[in-house]
Amino acid sequence: MHDEFDPDQLAVMAQLEPYLPRMYPLFGAAVELYNTEYPPMVRAQHDTRATTSGIWCHLWHGFQAEFLDEPGFHFLEIKNLKVLNIKDQILVRAKKVDANGRHSNNDTAQQRAYDAQEALPGLPPAAARIVMGYQPDAAFSLVERVTVRRPRGAWVSQVVDEGEPRRWIDITPVELPFGRERPARHG
Image (cartoon, rainbow, N blue to C red; front, side, top):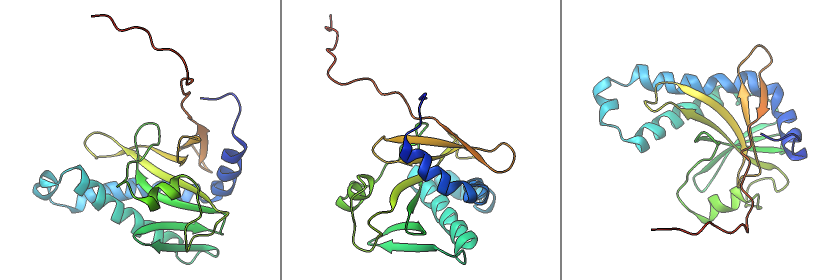
């Protein structure tokens, strides 16, 4: 964690804060729906990709059900890239993430451009591109944490489910400095 907040992190999280109480529960609801409505035999045959895909579909539907009629909210799809556009200021991709809020993707030019904050046709050019993700437990039975991350490691926030409104904390990992010599390997 850092002693000082990134100004970009503060701005993005301030814009998201009013919506966090409505966004946070969508992640747990998607995981719960997957676990309660899919028969155990079907879930047992799913690999991680199928499980993640099923949960993502329920999550995206939950976001649409919650925000479709919200003024300034638009659901965009550009060549299979689905994002929630919040007032042309923030673009949100929903993803499964690891403990550091990092997601994995099929490596495409479009996904690399999104993560690098580059302009993409059909997306508001000035909007911050973020990933809002859930970290499931090993069994995909519950959500361990919900994060908001600026891709490419700039910063990561964890949404904290304590009281109302939902709060967030900075959990940006401290990166080791580059350029240090590695110790010699022996043996």
